[in-house]
Image 1 (cartoon, rainbow, N blue to C red):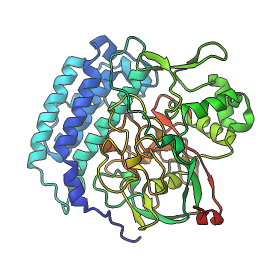
Image 2 (cartoon, protein in one colour):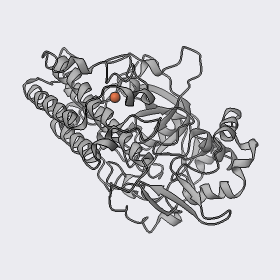
Image 3 (spheres, protein in one colour):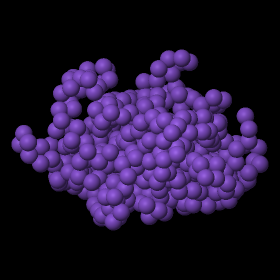
Length: 460
Ligand SMILES: [Fe+2]
């Protein structure tokens, strides 16, 4: 395997990632998502798919205690009695409300106690590039725990979306689409050739993003922007949900069984009336120019077939999101290696919805594709499997237990790019997310693609 390097010095990148700042940002978000509800609502289960928010809260502290206080700091356990209660592998989400969980008050005090110890440890722990402990190299374990907390915060936001009752969260709407959005080409060409998939050098990349390896792809045409609510309504209006030709056989069965007829949280005003959606406790007209959200993989796959197209593979998506054919470089983000400022990507829960399709021209990829990062997770055609040379780190339960047996199909589909609910610390072009193809509560949409022919590469 050849040596790949980020164009930016990994040490410089790790410094820019500043563990104390990202841990602090994650904690502010966790508290904002839980301080807005009373104890009863925090301990209630709002959907069998989700944990009570109070479980997420103490689980965040428990993981931080295990990895930062005990493992990185070498200190004795603060609350070893909590380990079995907050072990995600021991209790499925549906069973968690019945556990003797910490009430919100004690959970908040536990989180504060753990954080105080973690920050002392951070201050006294060398995190240099050649640390003999790979967990401490470039502060990886601190970055891992900040990403873990932010990932739970996104899950908690999905729980908020599933909760019924009056709204408790608010955020300004995203800016309207830029003036050029309406004139963008429907698709962009991603030229054929090799690119570097995954990373061996990004300091805080997780085990499933590693190692870097070269992948050769034929050229393809990719949607410039994610599929919009308006385009998805055309699929509905054309009887897309009633025509098994568009559906994967397992998807068709699921469509019948679950009685799917529109994205989750949508309802129609009469049989042919306008579409409305429920969003964090408010009902509002479906905005036609936003990327469609809350569709499962089977719906995305059916739409793509109806449109005469297909979902991109994970490799195609990643190439579009980081490879610059002009320079041959593979960057951390679609626009290069500079940090994901608000004008480049809709990340960080600044808004409680995706930005309109065509937003963030400053974050465009070399091909001209927009919004590959942020706004909505994008379903890909690919199952979740390890890269060649994968090594579990720092524990098997992070990724490895989700991989299928060699040669077997994965029960999960890979999602890429993050959503408006994803924090920048947990988002980069190599980042891989995965979920069951029936899941709709996550903040996921999609875009489609089609094969190109070599002659297309000469076209303007
Ligand atoms: Fe977790």
